[in-house]
Image (tube, rainbow, N blue to C red):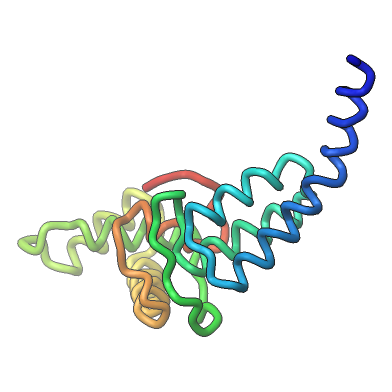
Length: 156
């Protein structure tokens, strides 16, 4: 009996994840909600390749499924532009500066803190704002940072 369980487990580890990956793709295209997509992604991820896992995660993010409790957004046009985690952090630091502090002073302070020229910070802030606006990605900092091209799970 134990041998059969092990064989079934091994077969499922190879074939079931492939089936789950296929079901994820099918249900994603059919417009499944975030809880269903997360369920399928979690079923598939143990046997899926790294590329398959990344593809599923990219698809989830493309419809704003950041957790199993998220509400799926309609799939829109492909993302317009991207930004890095570092650019986003500079942007967030400037945006979070009290409005009583002049912009030039805020740029100088953040520049000194991160050893980045104020002009580069200004350009990064402008770039991140444009990308967030073009893609309608304005949200909480924890949700916005997930759109960074090099985001790997860290939060703001």
